[in-house]
Length: 202
Image 1 (cartoon, rainbow, N blue to C red):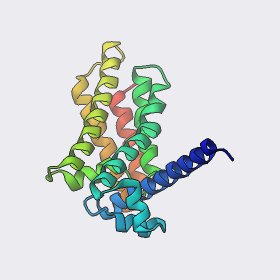
Image 2: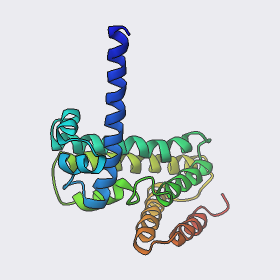
Image 3: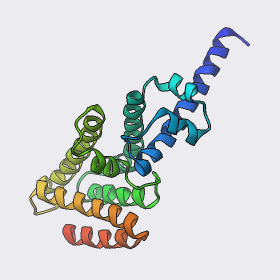
């Protein structure tokens, strides 16, 4: 084995360890709160030593910030990327809404949508973790507005783009929250009906 291949192997193992830790941290952050996310809690969840987790992230703050970034990448893969694979307009609106509902329904994260949960927790707590969460939400809301506005500009919808995007986001949020509260898939069916009414026959 060459020095280069040994180094590459260690790097790959390190990246796999980091990804596994961040995945576990994301679920912990939703269930137990991201403010309480700690190196000790993640170590217990993953079976790693505290020194091992600390070696990957350094500080609690870095663990929290990298957890938000990892959750962002998962959200983009699950919700945004499928929408970008279809043409713009109403078809893309329907796709992104369905992807969002499916992301919540499948419990990609144990506690539903990572950003809904952490935003509710951090809404009145200033700091870098809150800023990271709200930056992602701002990007999501902007993407949804652009998607809706494109359909309006193309003449596929007769609506105020900002208001319609707000209404769609509210429906997606309500479906996620009520499904968690009641332990039921019923809210997702209700959300689909509400979205269909908003979009009409477009």
